[in-house]
Length: 147
Image 1 (cartoon, helix red, strand yellow):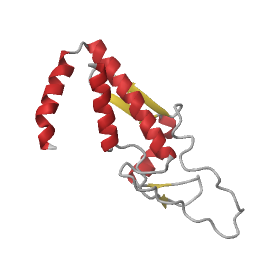
Image 2 (spheres, one colour):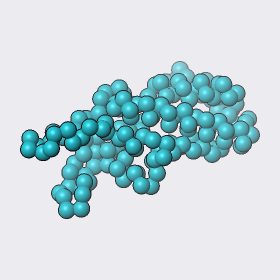
Image 3 (spheres, rainbow, N blue to C red):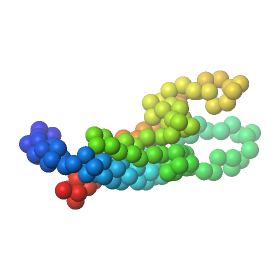
Image 4 (tube, rainbow, N blue to C red):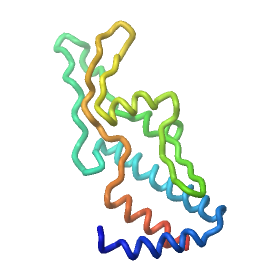
């Protein structure tokens, strides 16, 4: 990473030369493309490092068969719940208020109650949001195209 330091310094100078409106357009574009990549990765059920998500807990044998048919986080990755925004200093991809708790529990592998009168469950860590090398290359490409 240190061999890219002069390159990053030049890039920072070019970005500083942009007008605030130009930087805002750039960050919004980066945020939208990042959201698309995060959505594709969540659909593929993979962590940013490429490893698959931890599987769901097996259901009891006497439970109704075929109960869980949908993949994990199918609604969570939609544009309705996953928002992309940008301002002159940052590009942000975040979950809306309604689903932030669910996303946080899975992102960090925390304890949560699945229902009101149920015991706490420790959820395995499933990284919903994160950057990998492909994302960084995509961000650099967007910046170069914008400049």
